[in-house]
Image 1 (cartoon, helix red, strand yellow):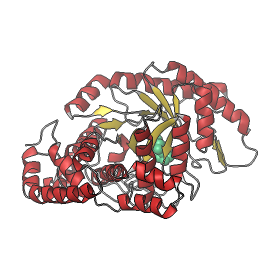
Image 2 (tube, helix red, strand yellow):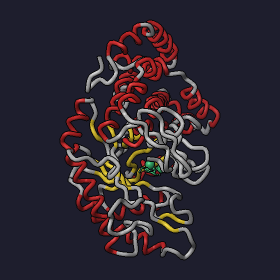
Image 3 (cartoon, helix red, strand yellow):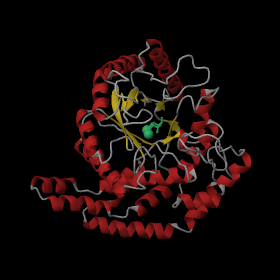
Image 4 (tube, helix red, strand yellow):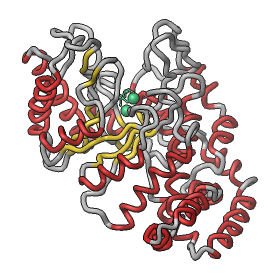
Length: 433
Ligand code: AFD
Ligand code: MN
Ligand code: MN
């Protein structure tokens, strides 16, 4: 029977795995032989993968939408407790997402202690808090239409700072240790905003937030090339973000959302620069074809995701100082069951991490030192083209998850059961939540 901590009946998962485990183990042994020929110990890789986790966004379990429309699915979560239960399903089957990143005010509730206890009962804890000064809330005294932390009006800036301080205070009650700040501040016309003054306002406001951070907290500054402002944004690129982090304080670092860059930008090179600066906060993983599309991680450009992990695994291998990135999915599930997309995307991020672990760093260094471009790139392609599915399946199975999470999820009939319990929501309105 399902329970609070196990929304999917564990006997169903066991039955699911029983008919698949022999093949999974055989495939694992076979891959182990292949990797041994490359002097790679599969069991050591598996141990690292078992420790890997990526946080999921609370807003990701609700059907997303675009500015044109939102087409809700069935059994949509009604509030943050429903969201936590859906996040628990993702983690129970996939075993790679033990932490949830909340968004305030979207996840506001009346009893934060009850929320923390509920999360703990689900085997979940809380990752970075996300503030929201990119939209106005009901009865909000001052509007963010012309910005928030960088607004020309000090009273509006103060209101936006206050909201971020509240997010920190809520996060403290939940055991979170970080605040992610993404603002929509910018301009739609040349001349509308004084670029340097707006940036200075943002720095001054963010220093006030930074001063409120508990000793063991961090503040992640999330840059984005455009949207909702379409001529300029205050924290537009990694350069603005790095300048801001260095000006704001030691707890500030730069968060890389994969959808937030100018077209064709080399994101893995940006990651290398932020690692070198000691200011890489972490990631919002997703994929995109044209902009901040928030598509499922690795669904369009899996090699790009692998190359990002190649930089991350290389930095960890070299013991780079201040290297402790936070990993989170940030996707909008408009046409899939959000739980299926989140499980699949978490596994894709895990896959890229696993493949990057297969690269022999000494051999790559030697090829680079010898200017042997072909050997170097073939080393990366060999790792990327290695099917590490058996490792992911064994890690999931050994952690009590499902060998094939989507198949198990569909067999459990969770969505249909939620559709019985949760009323259908109207399709009115657009936006990602
Ligand atoms: C939007 C923004 C940004 C932010 C997310 C949650 O583009 O990625 O992290 O909303 O606030 O996707
Ligand atoms: Mn993001
Ligand atoms: Mn985004």
